[in-house]
Length: 435
Image (tube, rainbow, N blue to C red; front, top):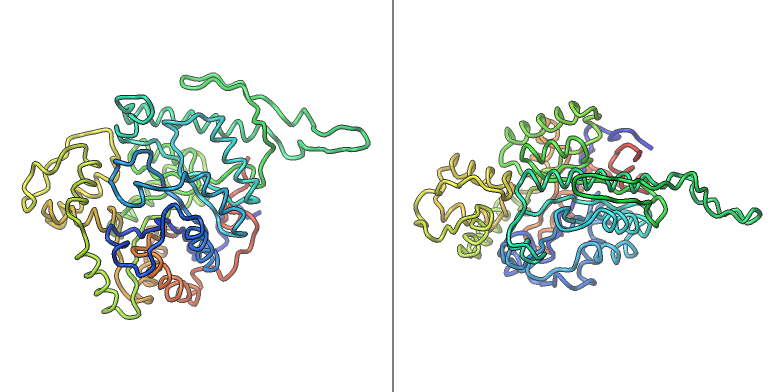
């Protein structure tokens, strides 16, 4: 197994899946409207991504229908259940699911992800999140959310327990010796006897070690606490950077933090989210983007901003400046990205609401296949990314154009694979063996 990415110029690409498209108006622009609860539709998307050789099929999650109030978040399949179905409908692509450490327990999630890793034969990743909305808390018998520091302290111990549970079964624990009648090597199956501030878990898991040893760990926090946790535990980091300079700064900071934590920086991949608007020409792409923005519902954008900022923005003039945001316990990194964007570009509240609704706070790249490939190559070679989490604005049209036009251009430049060289996700990402 490789110890780091096989080529410094090879991009890693995740497909961030929203069955109705990532742009808030994308579902209104498609001619082939699917459903976020239709397994046939989701299987079709996964197989398209696998045929294109994407590294990851990534499924986000929200634990409350009131968060952002978007079609794909109001009604969606539970991610682990979805990935179990896709695991038997695909053969090579990695399958990543979001699950919260704030409203779960380590034994249950460790067992579920290990089960998925067995079902998929070693292709599963866990996107570790802490949750941040009080609307979510109220679905779990709480009136308020633990503060930011408390959520990350719990997440750190949660991962510690999960790692111990996965390592409680060693390679070779299953002997299955008919002659002796010995099925297990008990010395290779050990309880963990964890006693901590948040959890008391005896272990071991009641499932054997999975093909990857353990799932690939993804994290997305860009706050100080998020970066610190990722430095210690993540193998893939999702982030949102608006400019190349911001991307370079985050990349340097995160890689330095990984090194300071005593880990190899090459063993952690940085994948910013990006919404590519692809056209057969630059002009066609710009027209697609213009038309999409005519479908933006400013009320939806205000709902998104209000949820992220923790304040009702309808009380402020739409065509006035973006109001100061009080310090809060929400998604701090995304708040900072949006407020920095508003300050840098002099955006009004209406304009920022349109950006938030249209792009969900991620970077948008508009152009031809060559333009998109140029942008991706620049970020890779300038030390701003190891790849990208791709967010098609319209599904299936923009996904299809990205696969038809951009993927071959990246392959022509030697920036992206033409086949899956290995069996497991960990190997295909060039990550070290799990220990």
